[in-house]
Length: 401
Image (cartoon, rainbow, N blue to C red; front, side):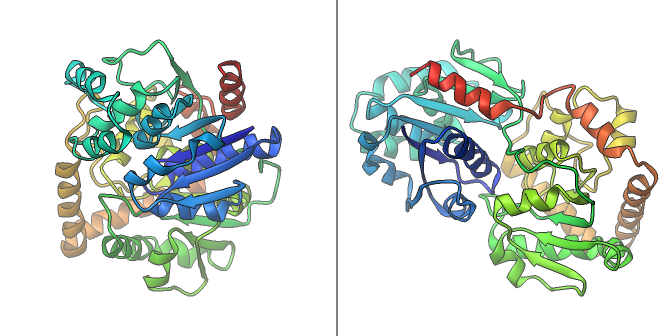
């Protein structure tokens, strides 16, 4: 079969799920898979070499000219423009979602009425209409256009019910898991670039992170290989420390290095955290790159006690204590508050001293708990499985064709 896969452009999380699904379809099931996307998602999937072909789209309007007639069905990771364009081309669409907790449609009934009115119009007109929709409202158009929804975790906004919805485990690529010597430390900046973090901000953020972690880098650089991984544009512009390798790794190579990692420093995003859990790597969470990181931390550890969070999940996040997962605040406001905290961290000596103590506390937890990875996994697995999800999704799709 020929399968079209696409994803939302937001750092690397959605693209990594598209890549992981394609890897199973192409390499385990023998199907042809092509990726369609823009910006960072296209670059990520092209470097992964997990697709037969990758096609760059300049904007959401380009979905109107995708040759859907060449494909048997479509998988979209949170890209509503692809979903509705595929539906208009009479293709079955399968929606994969890891951020469902944030889609908060208080106006669901009004949006459903809008969808019913516009779905019969030409695709170009529909895409233009969706581009003008507020916030995340256009996501619901993609969901309404899909044959089946696969929702990672059980975080879905239950105000919106859908009989075609299925909760699934972590959508990750676990094919490189094997027993190996733990000989590296990874500091992952993630994909970074997203609507809330431009290139200039990402470079400053990366430099700050390595400055705060310098005591750890200096302590371990003669014992472990130390990688700072992320977006090449960002890494090339950052200051470079001795004893550190700066690289944008293709996803397969990242996972191979993760398999031999002693400790992973990363933003608290679903994809990287679930990969760390699956590859049995203890994790320390870095300062937030966007408004969602703190909420994702609370969601992934929602079945943990406060004492377990403090003991087993060392982190350097700045704004997690103010969050309530039952009341998600506006993203623009949260990013503005984060920027204020970063300014304080760069200019307030007392705050800097307090923060450096937190770095030392994280280091103590890592060094003094040889079972940290197992204990983190036990907490996360209370909420979600990190095994076998993609094969289940693929098998389910084929029963619905």
